[in-house]
Length: 381
Image (cartoon, rainbow, N blue to C red; front, top):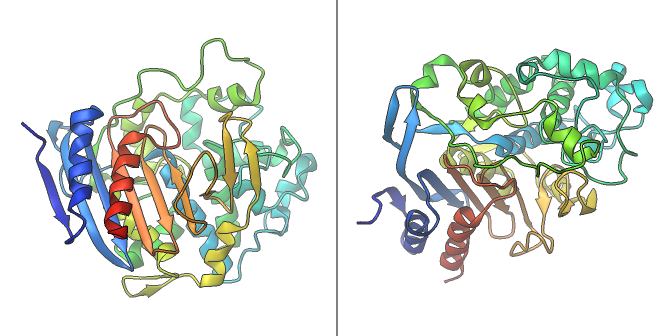
């Protein structure tokens, strides 16, 4: 008996429903949602499967949300782009212009573009940390104020898996005339106007609908990995168990690189702005010129942390041999375990896949990819 798929698809996009259902048959999916918008309008909004909540196992519902890990980063990127749009932030200007204490440790010329593209040399922290320290924004940015880069900024990318969010969060706070945290800025200026159910810092009134992630079976790095390597230093200080996201203090904290809660509908809805020329659902947030900055290549080569080829623009990943997107107007990012966001500015399409069973991946997997291929097949039919 096949999985029951809930939600809606526009005429012509029925193959997306079929591909989504196939994930339970072929890829051991448990609970998930997928959404697509085209030219500013929703054309796919589906959910299915089961999920464990604080109260126990239930069906994955229409308004189920979950920690989407690094797909959260895309919301931080948009927050920075909105600051650019409003003239408060120059991505090429040294961060120390806005945040003077950051100039310590030889970082006086490090710019926001370096943080967005993971080339700032600050993929981790020198001081030993506990997992609970990830809840303390001020402590972590204070360490990075004093710290020297681990490699020459701009020379290579090294995935700033957790650290990127605190750095961008402080930049947004320093450049926002109201001095708001990134989570508050995002809620007020992006999620709120777009009526999008995505949260960086989740209130207790949402706890009952937060699905628990199912952690991946293996750690991110092999047991014999070089303990002095940038990769190991990045992902083991502090060590992060995916199950930690079930804690209420994690949900409440603003962790702009990894702690956002949403579903495919909210992710795709927000990125409709970028896919649709800066306007979505009656809100004009960005200009085409600001959106074009995403595609300003900042790094291309083997990432020092992920140890795989990566081509990066301003925050988002760009078309490359590793990520053969359909056209040069596409950008992407994904979350630990398999969540995925694709933005196609040429076809004005926004795509998102969000799930609870985490696979051993940081850049998407066959579940999201298969449904994405079906969406493109429907688009081109």
